[in-house]
Length: 486
Image (tube, rainbow, N blue to C red):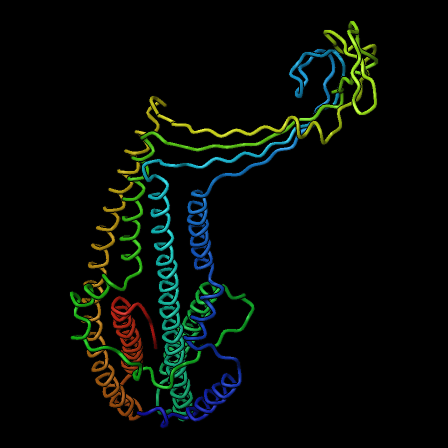
């Protein structure tokens, strides 16, 4: 018997249609909207974006390490007791205030390309983090698509349970009339009441599964749990475009994934990064040639100038000389004769000028013994390189295994879906015949309920198989193209 043959079925259809119209008026979430929202709000994507920015900062810092260092300093001190005057370099026992200023620079001339290799290593590391961010986005997009399909599947199972419940209610109503007329025993009504309770419980479970899958979706989106979420359900789930099995041959998909999978590409860049890191660690064990230069000056408030005052000359007069109409004494062995000295504080500008000093130098740093630190670092980076190579091999192996597993599951899923479709057709025919026999009193209630449950289970199996097949094929498509669409 078809759905429209049951009393009350029309009412159920009207209620479902009214609910659909109400939902259409609500704000719906398409798969694209979910993915776009997650790209901006998902926590794991934000965490990977932080790692990407940290790698970029490390690269920028290593690049700027090639330019000369420049530092300046200004200081002031008050000295008391016996101390060295920084301007005269003499010991004094009086208190004085001093100040100094300096500007210094240093640049590495040659270090066996250690810095350049470090820069190259950090550059590869930054590029690898770009791909790791892309991987995080792809993973989130695929998880959202999987969750979206799960919500659609759970909604479909709710509809199947609602139909099953409506059928049981309609049959119960018909049986109650037959019991009242004395056509069938009361046990038939009791059996259908028990079946109604089971169908109601199954519907509650299906509705709860929708809630749980919706909560999972909100967690992926980092969406507040109190915000309504209504998925945009495709008009025909069977119309979702899927690749043919011959288009997703596992070896062909694996070959494509080796060039498109961001994790595999990140592994290659990380290996290059560690290769340059090994070269940098090796260069650090050799001598480093550096150039340094600096300028500075000092000032102290107790530095005085000695001013000698000339008061006359001494010597014997041996004659006069007329020059330009004037007479001058000629004195033998003249020498200055100072009768007093005058002390004055040396001005600030004069001290700064007098004490101005410059320095330039070249140094060669030769590591001879430092507790085996440089040698250990070199060996450590070589082991890290080997570890990364093993990680690449493991990721390649895991990717190949995942693709072949997904292909095997897809083949099984399509076979399961075809079998489930045939099972629904057969169960529907059996249920139609059973309904006719039950209405004529030729079948007991237990056998009829068993036939009805078989149809219900076949419908649930078909829904699960259909969505499982879609998921498996989309997974293969994701491995091949690194994108997901519905």
